Structure formats: structure tokens, C-alpha cells
Length: 329
Image (cartoon, rainbow, N blue to C red; front, top):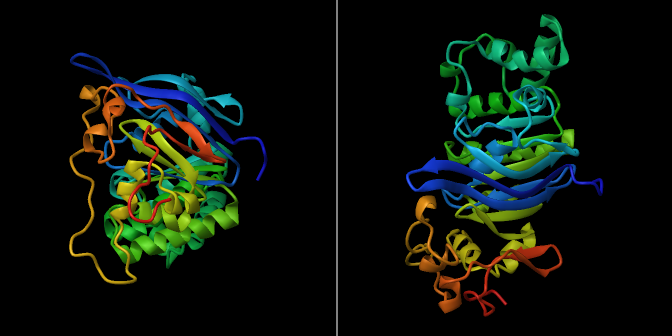
């Protein structure tokens, strides 16, 4: 991988108008992504993961207010004109949406939807675009690709539709893929197939990938590095192996312990994080996780911790310095 970042995000915030002012759903996020790197972003629903991805392509909607910077190969994406972003979407940055049924147009055939991007961005003719579409369907292991091109989304299974959406994101050969919980609506068998497919495609295309999920077990299978989000902020960044061996953040520990290990005896009760994620319009003073945290003390309730490096390539936003759980040093 090159030393120069493919994507550089600095102090990026996304807000929407609320009754008492602007409500931040993404709050001062900074991260780098190297060419070919697989970054996982994990957190509960409402933590800002999807809004972060949408902001990179200007898809948050007309009421969103974006502040900060996101540079792709040195090109600023935040605040870029719609015409300029339209040249980036699909051609240079591909998006795999969470629900393939809503990402696909029910009135159009798979062939029409799959070839639209490559014909628009690369100027391919009908026959060349069709050949390219067949190649991509074969690459994502869709059986009988000729038949699939003539079908409509409702004629396919959920797993098949997700493969089609992945093929659409790849057809213009982008070097950055954004995947918004691509396995959430799938059963565990199909989920495993999709994760295997993403690993294969990454090895084949060498594209960088940002995978958003609420499932830490999914991250463990595929990611090189992980960013943990809570209440719109990144509260932890680390390599995937270090994330599981050195939680070093109470929220990360809670996510990790909620995974059921299939080896050894099953626990009498499943571990959980008490309480619910905060309302972005009514965040508590101090650390947003403090009301749910077993380790919170007075400082946590009045002061917000900054993300700071605690070891090489390992950062966290937390004041607590003691041990976490049974097996964390």
C-alpha cells in the first residue's frame, strides 16, 4: 500500500436542523484510509456510521449541514458542486447500500441498472457494457448471469440482490468502496458468503474498502483496522487484532463481550450494554457514554474526552485508566 492516504477526513461534522438548533449526528470525525486498506467502522444504530459514509458522496440530503474536510486523492469532497460529485460517484468511489431491495429500481431489469453506470462514466456501447456486466456477475458468483440480466429485483433472493448491488458498485472499477451494513438483512449462511466475496474482491481489485456494521464479529473476519463510533464520534481506533486483545475503552469492551463465543461453555446470560444510545439532540454533558458506563467517575460527567493515542496506531477517547473486564490488561 502507498504511504499517501487515499482518503483523508478531518474534523468532519454532519448536522440537521432541530427544534433547538442544529443537531450533530457526526461530530468532528478524523481518519485516514490507505490505498487497498480495509477499514471497519462499528457501533450501535444511531452512532453516525451511515451518515459518515453518505457525507463522503454528498448523499445526506438537502437539509444536512456539513463542516470539515474529506479529501479523496487530494480532491475535496465536502462542499463540492453536485456536478463534480456526480463524476466521482460510482466511477471512483463505489457505494454498496444496506438494503438491496431499495437500492435497486423495481421497474427496471438488472441488466439496465447494472450497465447504466459504466455506459455513463466510461462511454461504453450497449454490447461492451453487457459484456462487462456479465463479467461482474461472474466475479460475484451469480449463477446463470445471462438470465439474471433480464430479470427484475423482485425475482431474486436477498442474497442474490446483494451480489447485484456489489457488482454495480464495482462495474466502473473504483479504487474505494463504501459498504453500508451489506449483510444486515441476510441470514448467517448468506452473510458468510457475502463476507467471503468481499475478501475475494478486495484481493482481486486491490480497492480500499470502508465497511460499516453494528456487528463486531463481522469486523473481526475482514478488517485491517477498526474505528468505533458512539454518539457521532470516533471513540476508538486500532488494528483489528489489537482491538480484540486490548479493548482499552468501556464501550469497545461492551461490544466485544456481547459476542457469543462458540468454543467453551455458553454463558448463563448474554452480555449486554445497559441502557440505550443517547438522543443526538440531547447529549449528556461530558462523555456521551458515561450514563451507561460501569467505570465512569465525576470527571467523565462534566468533561468530554478527546481521542488520543495510547500506543502506536491505537487511540481512544476515555479518562479511565484501569483494567477493563476479565481479560483486558
